Structure formats: C-alpha cells, structure tokens
Image (cartoon, rainbow, N blue to C red):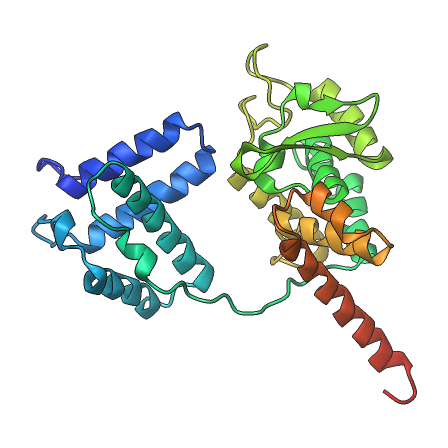
Amino acid sequence: MSGSAPPSELAQLITAYLDERRRENVSPHTLRNYASDLQQFHDYFTTPEGVTTALDALDTLALREWLGSLYDRGLQVVTTRRRLAAVRSFYRWLLREGRVPVNVPKLLRTPKMPRKLPAVQSAEETNKLIDAVASQPLERPFPERDLAIFELLYGCGLRVSELAGLDLTDIDTTERWLRVRGKGRKERQVPFGAKAALALERYMPVRQPAALAETAVFLNSRGKRLGDRAIRTIVKFYSTHLMGDSSLHPHSLRHAYATHLLGDGADLRSIQELLGHARLSTTQRYTQVSLEDLMAVYDKAHPKA
C-alpha cells in the first residue's frame, strides 16, 4: 500500500490477491473496484501512526465494526454491498491459501437492496434524444462516434463496459451481429438494427486510431480505446444539454432497451439472452416496470380508476 514504512501483512496479502485476480484475466474495471475497496478496508484497520491490525485479530466483531462504519458514512447500499463482496472474495482466497481458518466476512449479514425500480424513458423520449444527437447542434469534435455510441447502447442494450470493450473483429456488418464480452468474460451475440448499422458505417471512415494495431471500435481524442468513464461523460453531456436531464447514464439506455422490447411483446427468456443476465429473476424486474406503466395508463384512462 502507501507510505515509506514496509507494507503490513494485510497490505502484502491484498497485493498478492490482486495479482492473482489479474492473472485470472478479470476485467480492468472489476480489478480497479476491488483494489479501491480493499485499500479502504486496509486503511480502516490502520492507525494514523501506520500500524495495521494483524490478520488473526480481524474477527467477526472487528469486521462488524468496519461494516458499521460504512453505514455511518451514509454510503449507498449498493456501495456497501460491493465492498463487502470484495472483502469476502479476498477472504475466500485467504482461506484457499491457508492464511485464515474461516471466511469471517461471510458470517456478516449482507445489506438488503431497497426495492427500487429503474426510471425508464419512453420510446418517444429515447428516440427524441438520439435524433437530437444525430442532428449535432452542439458541434462536438467526434459526432459520428458519439451517435454510434448512442445507437449501440440503446439498439443493443449493452453495458458500458461491453461497449468500451468492443473490438473491430466483434462486428459482423453483413449479418448485423455483435460479439459481446459480458460479466465474467462470458461471450454472447447480439443483433443490431439498421440505424445502428448506418451509424457504424458513417463512423468507421472517420475513426482515427493512434496505431494500425489499435483494435478498439470506439476511440478517444488520442486514438486509443475510449474508456467507461468517458462514455458515461458523453452520454451525460448530451442528455443534459439536449434534454435537460443530467440523470441519464448508459445503463438508462440499457433499461430502456429491455423495457421497450418487453412492451412490444418480446418474451423474458429472449430478453435475458440479449442482456446477458445469468438469472431470469434479474430480467423479471422489467415486468414490474411495464406493470407500473400499465397501471399509470389505467389510472389516467379508466372511468372507474
């Protein structure tokens, strides 16, 4: 970890664990999150003088106090759950390596997620935004790239990491299929429509890689792969300036994709495959969104509502 003093036992083990995950070829995004969460875990058990609690002293009570500190800081439940998951994964590795007798954080209760349905734009609102991006009133430096980003996010329901990870060889322009690498490096094929195909067709001739060996589809101003954060910034910029909505993010377009498919008659199993969900229960939340929409229509239109 940081500082001039020799790294603590805990710091050395965290470094070894992250090295192991790197060798397992986990995504850079996941690795960054685990490194950040475990750094915070290490720092909590380190005094201002730089003394870190010994590993064998990190019992259930100590870890409950650490988890309680996350609540006290007012972190969102999703952040607290992610940090607990990172520590549990670290302890699974420690247990496998024979460094601890038990996975202590597994004994902690996982914070429950609030039952909150995602806000979803209507098809009209989503198309209005993408049409506005296409007209380019903002005079952005890479208009063709930005439009292709929106068309693939909404037209294919991709996660932002999946979009950033697309390579040129992942696009089949003849059959209109994308090869997508999702969570856990699982690959799936996703079709794309005429609008996305046209956007890609217009973007490819103006794509300027820094080197011929650059395989990324979407590039930044330096001609290298466009990252997750940059894509989020692009989506937020357009939605803020064109629609006055600063809350929109790439996952909003994924939600819209799934909800609009369901509303137009697609079955849940097909949507599950297209989204790359491991469990059908994850996909089923979109039925709740659709039911809420139906109830809103009923309340507005039915005379007995």
